[in-house]
Each structure stands twice: as structure tokens, then as C-alpha cells.
Image (cartoon, rainbow, N blue to C red):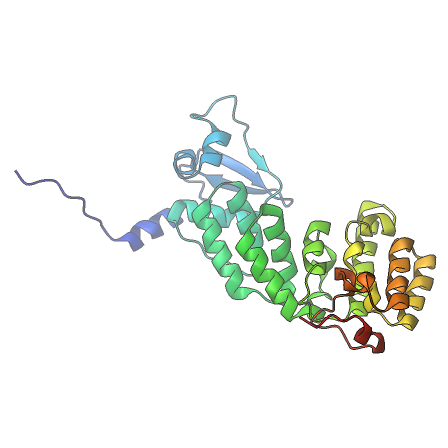
Length: 290
């Protein structure tokens, strides 16, 4: 007797048919209200549950009083949620630069590893100055190591431009720390101090906390000893008017100038970055540019 064999029909027609059901009221048995815009989205319980454990747990084994109607998902934008549905229905998705990070966030939160990898590959392809800090924040938040490394390398090569973006001002302290610890930033320390102050001001306004308090987790990574004496004096004066940097950190920088050589001038606080502009006192640091 001939053994049965598994044969496949055309995948394109099958995918097209399922794509027509995305957000289609026809035969829908679950309704979502999505995002801040509260957009109504229709879906099919059995398909979501068999494709994604998150929805299986959310929707339960069968319709009943325990399942809210509609299901409210307020934290994901409607466009990103529809992209997730498109992937669940068809195993393919059309990604866009302006929304891919939101789709990536949903893929991580919903445990959709294949969609996560598709998003990561797309982000790397479209990475640019405007997107890179936002991508770094997502990478840090969800522990996406390879993406984090790509973003840091991109910012190191395009430091001046990246520091002027809105995404930079919205970085979390842990994400900013990763940048400030880098020797490869193509930016002078004076500009980095200004960028850190701008970042702290934005955080202070959002969190309603003092600038110095917001800046505290990151300012220790500023290498003040690289500044010339006149720049350090100006910074000290501005710091009196608007506290940003602990006084003892400024004192340490002055010590580095006074001693010129010795242990004080050998730490990370005196190590030049790739974009550090030369100053007369740098010859006393005895540390080569990496």
C-alpha cells in the first residue's frame, strides 16, 4: 500500500486569503480596543491562540464571562498591533521605519521570537541618526545585546548628529551611561557636557525633579579633566548657577590639572575619547588616544 505523503498547495493564495481576515469583522469573535487612539480591531480567537501563547493566556480557552469585551490594549499603537496581527495570520509582515520599534516592542512582550528577529533585521537596515537613540533605548530596555552594540557603534561614528536628536534627550540613564563610558565617541568633552546638561534638563522637566538629581547617575562619566583650565572655570561658574555636577568631581578635575602626572592622571576621567580636541595640558596626561 502506498504510504501517504504530505503535499502543499500554493502558499501565496493561502497567505492572501488569511491577510483578508486581518481586522475583518467577518466571523470575528474577539474585539480589541487598541492604543491611545482607542481604535477598534477585530480578530479571530482560535487563530491568535494557536499562534501566540500571550493571546492564548489573555483570551482563555473559550469565550465566557472571564474574558473582557472588548479587550483593551492601551499601550500598543494601533498600527503596530495590526502589524502583529498581520504576522500572526500570514507569517509575514510589512514593516515601516517610523513604527518598527513599536512592532519590535510588541514582539518581545508577546514572546514572538520570529517577528522579533524580522524587526531586528529591519532596524539594522534602516538605522540612521534620527532612529538610532530610540533603537538603543529599546535594546537596553529589553536586553537586546546585538542591537545595543550596533546602535552604540553607530552613535560612536555619528556622535555630534546623534546628540542633537530628540531620541538622545529621551534616553534613560542606563542607556546614556553606555554612551558616556565609550572611548570611541566622536565628540569633544565640552560638547558632551552640554549634551548631558540638555538631557538632564528635559528629564527634570518631565519628572519634576532637580536637574542635579536627574543627572546624578550619569555625570560621573564626564571626563572633566580633559577640559582646559578656562573651560573648567566657566563650567564651575555655570554649575554654581545651575547645579549639575557634584563639586567634588570638579575638584578632582582641578587636581588632575595641578598634579599633571601621577596616579590621578591615569584614570578613566583623564582618558581621551576619539573626538577629544587637543589641548595644551593633554601632553601631561601620558595616556595615548585609543
